Image (cartoon, rainbow, N blue to C red):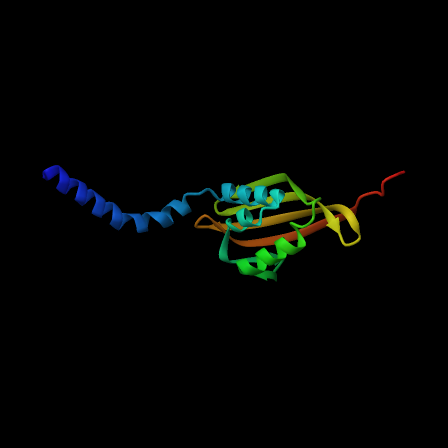
Length: 151
């Protein structure tokens, strides 16, 4: 009987603590791991995995402070319709800096511009809170077009 009561007591204690532990578990995810998961999903064109890394109220800005997208719905709509439908889309990270909740990536992106196939250099500044990307600031760099194929 004593053992049974101890099990019940332990179960009740765990039931009371579990809701408090869930936010702590999310906060223990390293910001770099969140951004890497987002980047891997970007390269896989996996909108569900990509959006799983973003907070529902995330914002994406063009440097210095031009709001481009506000909220998960706008972010998902843009990437599903304007990026992940491009079979050429693929990014590589030239350099990554991590400081606390901030991850800064210097990225090289292969994609199809409106003018044709090409590349884009960019810097993305990710702010991660509670295991989710809360804010991204994009600095667009050099844009280039690939040379036409020789026949």
